[in-house]
Image 1 (tube, rainbow, N blue to C red):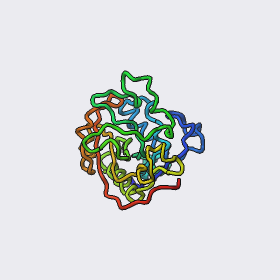
Image 2: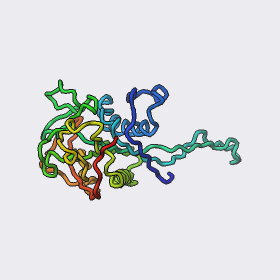
Image 3: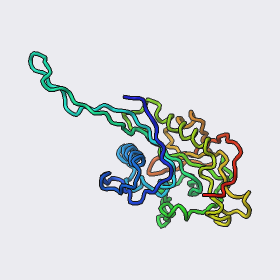
Image 4: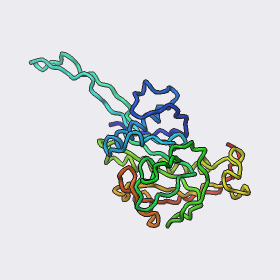
Length: 273
């Protein structure tokens, strides 16, 4: 296994993507990095954890940043053959592929409201509220609204959400997940205004602000909806469980909310797109 490397994909046009369709049948405009990310997510979440295939790709994917970690894997295409004397009569043929083995995504604000403690969610919809369709609505339709306050979130401050962290089973134990998290955190610290909405593009009213200084800006707060069984790993990376958010289920898997605050420097208000 060769030295791993990580590729970043910024928000992209993913129109026409459907999980489970062969790559050659998808629009050529869909970036390869995203296809590689979805290859990992399908392997881990759909095949291993039984998440419904139709629930894995959502309206947050086009507006998110995605990181994919690759390793060089040597694969034998034609095995070696030797005769009775031990002489090689057919040499082995092999090929090396940069194989995607892990991924993570970073979702900008605004977000759906915090999950209800004890709630059972499928495809972002709380059981009993199936008529709700906001999870599949256009991202631009999402409003900047106040949320319920929790232990680490006042219900108002814009936060960025990390999620869809996945490493293929055969490649766990190499700290690839930690490398992905560190890479994403280092990148947003260097680009703290990347997700700040443009006042000229959206207008103050849509952002729920009356002056430019009230426009929502990211100030270092990051949230994770962590599967409960891997919350200890997120804790090692600096995240703390938000007891006030409670425990809930997503696709039948128990989750907890966790937060981390990064120290970032002063920023300019984002006037331009």
